Image (cartoon, rainbow, N blue to C red):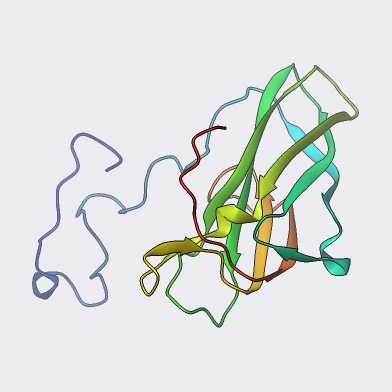
Length: 178
């Protein structure tokens, strides 16, 4: 709901107009006012030369691997903070239906005013690609290819994207040590 005065649409799709079965409100779209990760930093930023290490084109990842996203952030305005989000999706074919995008990692970086290049770096784990496997009653990372991309919010265009090849799976272990 975007406003407190939104008028709820009919619960039955038979009472809605043709082709509007996904509309939840009469007065406004059913999308959120602000997407996940949206925020005001009061500055403008540009990402320069983002890279993923180890190089995904020369590496097959296993479930216990981690990888690092790094690059430079330039600002053309006042000092501010930028949150970068790393999303992933499993490429078809998949064993089970998966979300279109899921969060794998993030980093928040302070950038000085009129910076030409502030370094950023944060890590993510292939374990975060896991899904529940009903056959084993456990969480597993499925073998396949995954697309990961860097963005500033859930609906923003990717700043960079990579394809990762993942081999194998793992069993989730209750470990609260970190």
